[in-house]
Image 1 (cartoon, one colour):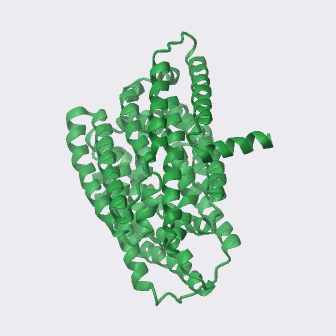
Image 2: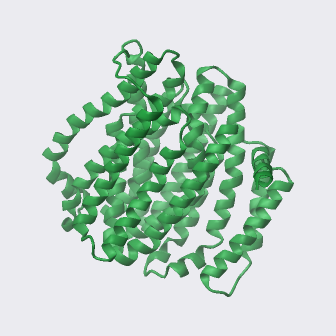
Image 3: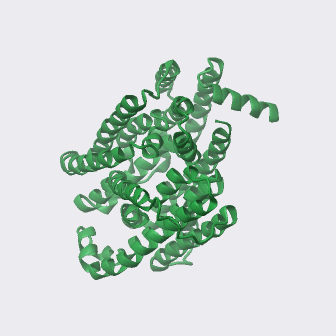
Length: 486
């Protein structure tokens, strides 16, 4: 776990800074300078492009991680990398004419509530193509265990880009039309950067020698593509349906709330960037004891750190929204709480998703994703209609609870392993006690001071308790090394 912990920590810093910048964008710059309507538009366009992205990448980025460590010869590895680029490029050439042939129908459907915004629908295609190819080249870096710079480009770069564009818009350097154009330019600059860096790190050669395993790889890509498409629906269908059923302003309110709740996923996003190829390597070499160790350690570490993020987030909500001081946005407080529980459960299952997608049982991801996407659509239609914006949060929680439980059952039945241990129970008890203590602590200072004081006290109590009771060996070792180096 050494390289995993080290790169996870570096990725955690990058993602943490990205979230801070994203918070400034989402909670201040967007509402202040663009307003909820245009903020909702940009978020909806990016969300819909995420729905399109799996159709272009076709799961090839996952195939690189799944099969790269399986090959020993460089020619075979180069053949896999070549294939991972050819498939998306062919799809792009086929997809672009179809998109523009039905462009009027697409934009009329997507922006039923406000057709004046439909002229920006073209952004969806351009961003989707860029992010699809970016993910492919990022997978090249991940299999070489070089996740840090790619993670910077994936997480931090887009937030910095948005900040730059919003500030430029606020001082009049850009109007909204140019804001949208430079958003696209920025995404393609990121793509160029990662292509150059990938070729420096991995030095591949064009090789069409993939006939031997083409059928197996294509089958894997097809199922992962279908799974990814369904998963994208789960991630972004709520925002898309809110813009369709309600208004784009509700997309802004909901997105802010989900953004806050997503802070809980920061540790997992940092860890999985490097852990996925390590899990694939263990499976390809039949190291099942190591696999069980990776699962339990990843679960324990993520439950410990994600629970801390859960406490810091939910115990400061009232002060946070008061500090935000934007009309209408406080409707998102119950959404943060509801979605937070689903996010915490997702973190608690550790690297189960990596195990399933990189094993011979990968086809289950398709059925899980298909079922969950259908469930997400049905629940969102019903719950948004019945309960409005909060209904989307309930739909998210229900889907996450059901799907994570099914994944735990699958890994237990096929590998006879599960993510939890006695330490998991101890962490839950510690988190519960901490929540009870600080939920009753009321401070009468300014919101920012309240957040700072309460967060500091939570951090000290929680971290010291976790360290003293050795709730995670990896975390204790890391803290000891950090203290020694410091």
